[in-house]
Length: 278
Image (cartoon, rainbow, N blue to C red; front, side, top):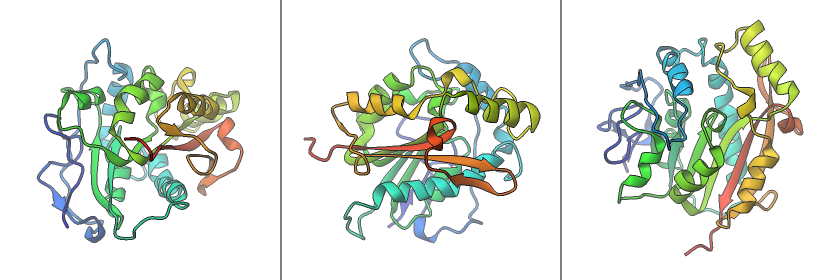
């Protein structure tokens, strides 16, 4: 069965790949030609969670998104760990091996995760969206054909938006199927994370462009879990409905999972939507 890959919902500008591109995820080769388009400007509405300054910053980097040695190098190196964490969240579940999953990747950037997700045998479809001059993520709820997804991913997103928890509640959770997983990554607000992600990574080593991070917008994993516990539709049982994993970048080696490091640096989180919802 063919799957529509990186196609925006009706009325939304496509963020990465033209909507006519179709292929079977399990058969795509890394050399498959892909057409990409990038936004170059954005004006946020007063009620939008999208931060205009953040969008402008990342739009300026768009031409190098797919350079594995460029400004997004650390994201390319992190991508295998994203898949490892996804499989960790799904591992305890008993699934029909023939069951295919629908993915929604929010804040996809150049589509580093989305394109790799489309290659998974379990992927039925992958939809990837990103702020553009014409729309914001909140525009999803304006469409009557509201589709729900098995997996919603927000990798390196929530520390770059305004009002992250209201955004997750109102603009993300309605699109998650009962039994589906919301999976993301962000950075803990801790003096160590300021030293490593801003002072060292931006100012000293130049691993990422200056201005990429705002320490005040970082979120502790406990804050994310407290938000999830306030949501009646989410399950936050340790190991069943909630997962967290700290990761540390080791120069010359790459990203490595380090248990306990989630309180002072980068981490993944996953929370499951209850299956008993009508």
